[in-house]
Length: 266
Image 1 (cartoon, rainbow, N blue to C red):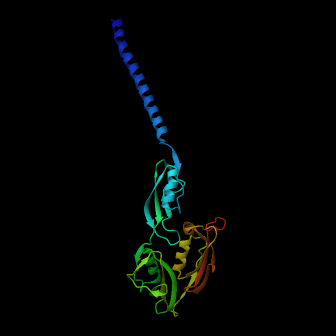
Image 2 (tube, rainbow, N blue to C red):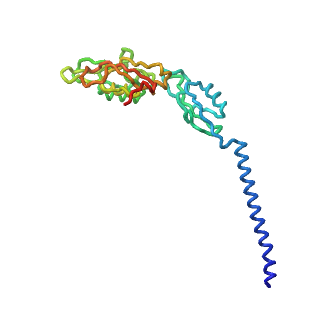
Image 3 (cartoon, rainbow, N blue to C red):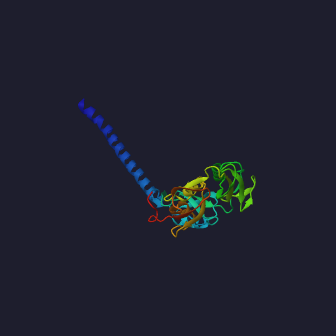
């Protein structure tokens, strides 16, 4: 009786052993196929994204093809200080690691300036007018103070020394000068804040909010292009920061750099 039971158990063990062997072989084949597929398609290879900034689209396409990537223009903005059609920004950023064949999105400088509608700034406070200009993509040029009952009340809006009425179309990034009131019987003074160590646009905005004018913007030799200018930091200002009152509309000159050795500690 025990011999029959033992003999009947042999085929079952043999089947199990063969099933285990088959599973192992199948697993090895699957792993081998995956490894081969990864090698054949370079699925796991990571590439470094080049810097396409300031290239034309054609130049960016050629550079991308050389490293196994492709580019696509997905947006455009306009700035006067860089050449039309040049790449201003990209995603992923330069130096990022991506897989082969990855699409890089490009933002280029528009061939034509964006058009915006001039708002009505007359009657607003200087700060309200500044915020309105910024929201439209326009730039505050010069503050021109004239005697009036209300200090910092906008009386006129000018473009190139001429009246520029609301509703007219103008290119984005255009400078708009404001004629604002100054009541000599009230406190018509301000002070020069410290903007050394601040980035370009932050410094300009801080001075404008103090009712001061920008006389000169001087970028040193380290500033090579538009992107550098946006990232430039003030390393010197004239006049220097002071709590001594100055007249509204006083001129301030800024000196900017991207050289780390010239940037003062904040």
